[in-house]
Image 1 (cartoon, rainbow over the protein chains, first blue to last red):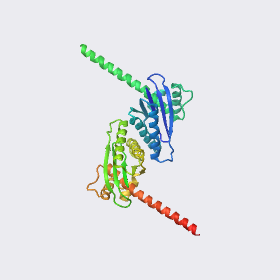
Image 2: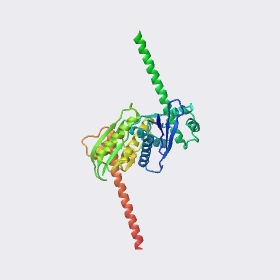
Image 3: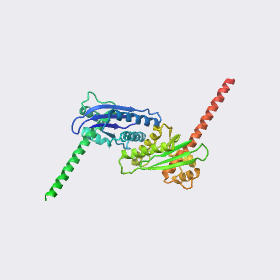
Image 4: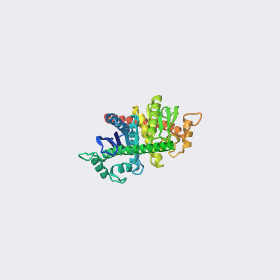
Length: 180
Length: 180
């Protein structure tokens, strides 16, 4: 399964592509950081981001897209830009006909470090180890995007297992009823 | 000058098309409200809005797009959705190669009512009067979108006059220097 993770931002937007299966160390395909100028017009910035993400989706042909969910807990100005960038990120996947899943920062941290309150350094360290990289991905936005992709692969696996278990249980119950 | 105004929202997004010149009552071409279901997936909602706005821009062929600027002053959850919808709105214009301008709610209110703190009813009443409509546009999101388009036409005119005056003054100063 190839997943393209996006850590949305207007000034720096992290993009990470990982290929893998649930429960095993994945393989890093690529990572990028899309930048737009903060003194540029908002329409121009969103359009630049839109084009860059569409190009990366076309280049890497992922099966699904994972985007970090945005909360209005930080600086109000930054958060509005991040929310706008996240809309562009979600659209980049949706417009390509791909399933798009959003994850909270703590879901991503918990997936790669085991703790939902892990710091940025810890996330970067674990991404580097899990993907067996020679050096930590830089900037942190790229590491976060790779962590999102890993989170999606692993969570997808968990969900698949839960669904399979539920299906098996339902079948067993059905067989039990048939036998009686 | 034909302007397409967008009052961004995920649940209800107002779109209003007005044709006019600065300082004269404009003509309403059309208004629409794009709705998406609040219990629907965010990727699906943004994609629906994206497609609807692209279709309206293609249908009405405006020369420019005016979008309401979003502030994080209200309900946090709503504001994140509104910020995402505003990104889709800005992109709808930018992707069509049109100039996109954003206006604050108070700029829009001031343009159509003379007061930046006017209420929704007052904005709707003035939009109805200025565009010589038989009935007030409903819902209020549509009236706001029409007000945005009017605001853009009038402000654009003001800006054009200011630029013309500045140019004339610069020319005069230049001639003065030449004569000496």
